Length: 134
Image 1 (cartoon, rainbow, N blue to C red):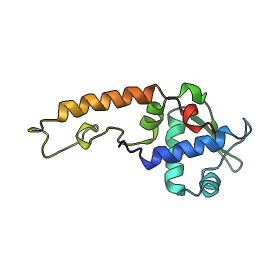
Image 2 (image 1 turned 90 degrees about the horizontal axis):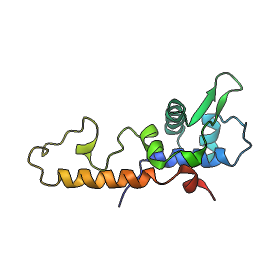
Image 3 (image 1 turned 90 degrees about the vertical axis):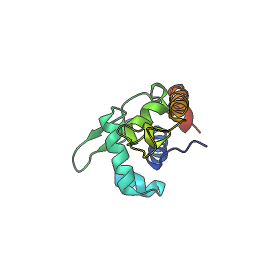
Image 4 (image 1 turned 180 degrees about the horizontal axis):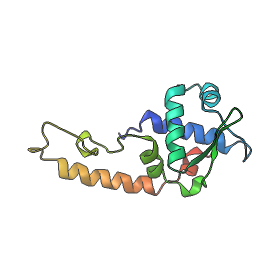
Protein backbone atom coordinates (compact mmCIF):
# COMPACT_ATOMS: atom_id res chain seq x y z
CA UNK A 1 0.00 0.00 0.00
CA UNK A 2 1.29 3.45 -0.85
CA UNK A 3 1.76 5.66 2.18
CA UNK A 4 1.48 9.44 1.96
CA UNK A 5 3.86 11.26 4.29
CA UNK A 6 2.25 13.06 7.25
CA UNK A 7 3.35 16.39 5.80
CA UNK A 8 1.17 15.72 2.74
CA UNK A 9 -1.80 14.63 4.86
CA UNK A 10 -1.53 17.79 6.96
CA UNK A 11 -1.11 19.96 3.87
CA UNK A 12 -4.31 18.50 2.42
CA UNK A 13 -6.15 19.16 5.69
CA UNK A 14 -4.89 22.74 5.73
CA UNK A 15 -5.88 23.32 2.11
CA UNK A 16 -9.35 21.85 2.71
CA UNK A 17 -9.93 24.23 5.61
CA UNK A 18 -8.64 27.19 3.62
CA UNK A 19 -10.61 26.27 0.48
CA UNK A 20 -13.90 26.31 2.40
CA UNK A 21 -13.30 29.77 3.90
CA UNK A 22 -13.91 33.21 2.37
CA UNK A 23 -11.41 33.85 -0.46
CA UNK A 24 -9.39 36.66 1.14
CA UNK A 25 -9.25 35.23 4.65
CA UNK A 26 -5.75 34.90 6.08
CA UNK A 27 -4.81 31.88 8.16
CA UNK A 28 -2.17 31.81 10.87
CA UNK A 29 -0.37 28.47 10.96
CA UNK A 30 -0.68 28.13 14.74
CA UNK A 31 -4.43 28.82 14.80
CA UNK A 32 -5.08 26.51 11.86
CA UNK A 33 -3.03 23.68 13.39
CA UNK A 34 -4.91 24.08 16.66
CA UNK A 35 -8.29 24.13 14.92
CA UNK A 36 -7.44 21.00 12.93
CA UNK A 37 -5.82 19.20 15.86
CA UNK A 38 -2.54 18.64 14.05
CA UNK A 39 1.04 19.44 15.17
CA UNK A 40 2.00 23.09 14.74
CA UNK A 41 5.62 22.50 13.74
CA UNK A 42 4.78 20.16 10.86
CA UNK A 43 1.86 22.35 9.80
CA UNK A 44 3.97 25.51 9.79
CA UNK A 45 6.73 23.84 7.78
CA UNK A 46 4.22 22.48 5.25
CA UNK A 47 2.64 25.92 4.87
CA UNK A 48 6.06 27.53 4.39
CA UNK A 49 6.93 24.99 1.73
CA UNK A 50 3.58 25.48 -0.04
CA UNK A 51 4.29 29.23 0.03
CA UNK A 52 7.71 28.69 -1.59
CA UNK A 53 6.07 26.46 -4.20
CA UNK A 54 3.51 29.15 -5.04
CA UNK A 55 0.50 27.17 -3.81
CA UNK A 56 -0.02 29.61 -0.94
CA UNK A 57 0.90 33.25 -0.50
CA UNK A 58 1.84 34.85 2.79
CA UNK A 59 1.39 38.24 4.36
CA UNK A 60 3.87 39.20 7.07
CA UNK A 61 3.03 41.03 10.28
CA UNK A 62 0.76 40.82 13.27
CA UNK A 63 -2.38 40.52 11.13
CA UNK A 64 -0.61 38.34 8.56
CA UNK A 65 -1.07 34.77 7.55
CA UNK A 66 -1.48 32.52 4.54
CA UNK A 67 -4.08 32.25 1.79
CA UNK A 68 -4.46 30.02 -1.24
CA UNK A 69 -2.70 31.53 -4.23
CA UNK A 70 -3.30 28.97 -6.99
CA UNK A 71 -6.44 27.31 -8.26
CA UNK A 72 -6.28 23.94 -6.50
CA UNK A 73 -7.87 22.27 -9.53
CA UNK A 74 -4.62 23.13 -11.31
CA UNK A 75 -2.34 21.79 -8.53
CA UNK A 76 -1.64 18.09 -8.85
CA UNK A 77 -1.14 15.79 -5.92
CA UNK A 78 2.33 15.16 -7.33
CA UNK A 79 3.15 18.88 -7.15
CA UNK A 80 1.90 19.08 -3.57
CA UNK A 81 3.94 16.03 -2.56
CA UNK A 82 7.08 17.52 -4.11
CA UNK A 83 6.40 20.84 -2.40
CA UNK A 84 5.97 19.56 1.15
CA UNK A 85 7.69 16.19 1.38
CA UNK A 86 11.46 15.95 1.56
CA UNK A 87 11.52 12.45 0.02
CA UNK A 88 8.64 11.75 -2.36
CA UNK A 89 9.94 8.49 -3.87
CA UNK A 90 8.48 5.06 -3.11
CA UNK A 91 11.72 3.45 -1.98
CA UNK A 92 14.73 4.83 -0.12
CA UNK A 93 17.09 4.06 -2.98
CA UNK A 94 15.08 6.30 -5.31
CA UNK A 95 15.26 9.38 -3.10
CA UNK A 96 17.56 12.09 -4.36
CA UNK A 97 20.89 11.05 -2.89
CA UNK A 98 19.28 7.95 -1.38
CA UNK A 99 21.70 5.36 -0.15
CA UNK A 100 21.14 1.67 0.20
CA UNK A 101 23.73 -0.87 1.15
CA UNK A 102 22.32 -3.26 -1.48
CA UNK A 103 22.13 -0.73 -4.32
CA UNK A 104 24.84 -2.33 -6.48
CA UNK A 105 23.49 -5.88 -6.32
CA UNK A 106 19.78 -5.01 -6.15
CA UNK A 107 17.79 -7.02 -8.68
CA UNK A 108 14.55 -5.02 -8.33
CA UNK A 109 15.76 -1.41 -8.36
CA UNK A 110 14.88 -0.89 -12.04
CA UNK A 111 11.42 -2.39 -11.55
CA UNK A 112 10.80 -0.27 -8.46
CA UNK A 113 11.91 2.82 -10.38
CA UNK A 114 9.38 2.01 -13.13
CA UNK A 115 6.66 1.51 -10.51
CA UNK A 116 7.61 4.81 -8.88
CA UNK A 117 7.26 6.55 -12.25
CA UNK A 118 3.79 5.05 -12.75
CA UNK A 119 2.72 6.22 -9.29
CA UNK A 120 4.11 9.71 -9.99
CA UNK A 121 2.11 9.81 -13.23
CA UNK A 122 -1.05 8.80 -11.37
CA UNK A 123 -0.43 11.54 -8.80
CA UNK A 124 0.02 14.04 -11.66
CA UNK A 125 -3.49 13.18 -12.86
CA UNK A 126 -5.17 13.84 -9.49
CA UNK A 127 -5.80 17.43 -8.49
CA UNK A 128 -5.63 18.63 -4.91
CA UNK A 129 -9.15 19.98 -5.29
CA UNK A 130 -10.44 16.48 -6.14
CA UNK A 131 -9.03 15.21 -2.86
CA UNK A 132 -10.28 17.95 -0.56
CA UNK A 133 -13.77 18.55 -1.91
CA UNK A 134 -16.39 17.36 0.51
